[in-house]
Amino acid sequence: MGIKEEAIGEAINLGSGEGHRVIDLANMVNELVGNEAGVKYVERRDWDVKHMLLSSIDKAKKLLSYEPQMEFEDGLKRVHEWLVENWENIGKSAEF
Image (cartoon, rainbow, N blue to C red; front, side):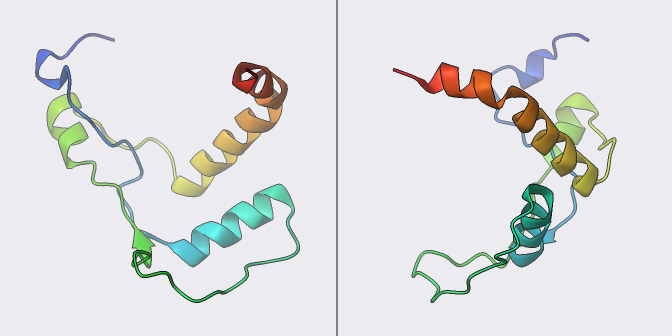
């Protein structure tokens, strides 16, 4: 690992580079956490206009030669596993 001078101070998205529908994300999270209640559809808020999410990884590719190493769903599962394993410490860190 090294330092890329041109990346210092830059905000860089890391992601799969693939688009995902918000409803699919909600369903994936519900499945991971065992939420059987499903998704509740409500009226869209004025500012709530996204139907799909896509992180642009163009800057990461250019500055860091970044290439995604895993599928989005696998990454989401790993994040969930980490949160479950570290939830107690996360709670302690958030205490005032």
